[in-house]
Length: 204
View 1 (cartoon, rainbow, N blue to C red):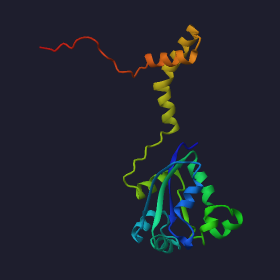
View 2 (cartoon, helix red, strand yellow; view 1 turned 120 degrees about the vertical axis):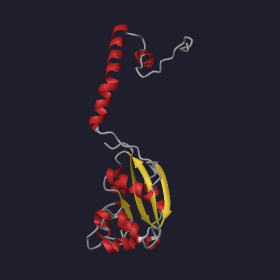
View 3 (cartoon, rainbow, N blue to C red; view 1 turned 120 degrees about the horizontal axis):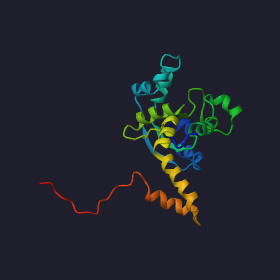
């Protein structure tokens, strides 16, 4: 499960006089996580860098020319399982076929061809990281720990203290076990700062 996977989208401004950033945002309204948005126009060189993974394909020159032909709006959006959810909103790449298979999606409504399909969505979390850094160079993206790193942290820093607290809970059998355990964890936090009440003695 992806927790608040941050991702970018690109939307052509005024494509066929229809698509606007507001309409894409309305499709995303139930998520309510719009981190950043900006309007810009990329040069052909910048588009080539952005779509570097498509370099060498027949449509690459047309793609970079089209994407640098007018302003775009880029956004950083987030929610659980964001990659799959955003793909379900914009639909498949080919807008013409999408009108038959996914008539309610944004590409079916605003796209005109395989190339001019109105919107872009990151293909993966790592692609989103790269695209966000490209479009929002000043943004800070916190790395997500791997499953192994998370399990190692819990095993080292959380489970021993929690197990000790649960053992004491069973021994004491308090009337309100949740409150008792919360207080116990606060008082027995191994990372709690140690405060010395005694006077500071300066060495001679």
